[in-house]
Length: 231
Image (cartoon, rainbow, N blue to C red; front, side, top):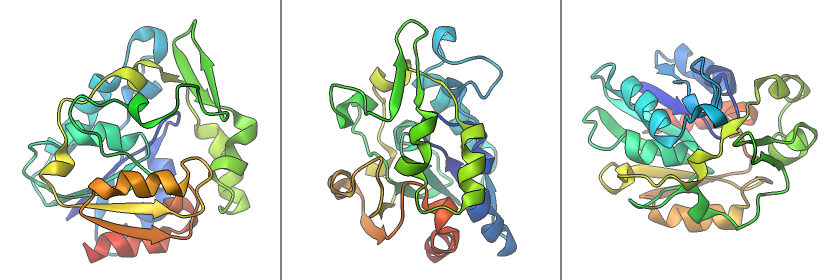
């Protein structure tokens, strides 16, 4: 078995965001990969004005999924659920999807269909540049309040400006309709309210709740590892 991690919006260096859970999995002989998302400027081309959007993210994740034929679990966080819905569709090696505080879009739905008309207060949108990002001064209190000080101190260095294109582009497929799925509700999440997560989770095959904030793979890595090994 292998695990492919798909990170959320407005961050880069996916391997850092997942490193605590990935390390525990590696100790059990399970390898993982966290493909870079072009819309976050991770492939050498800046996001926003360069036009890197959802389709480029889907292509990057799909390439990682097709790079091997061993049974695969895809773990998607937040915006990563939008990417995974299309990227994992029709990939025979994908055996299970795990959605962490995430979205399960129907074909034709986009990220904007899951939010309010106005940007969340923790986001900074630059229409001229065509990018958005997390306000650094709100990062810890909104997303990392249950993480240890080391993680809180390092996280700001792994933020990214992301292309606003990803918010309006619809997905062309919904892998969760064909592949078994588990939704991980983060009950202490201040970014995506738990009540909304529970609504999103109705589309998943099974639901697990964890007393954690928005990034349980950093604050509760053993619990996330155990969930994945149990699959």
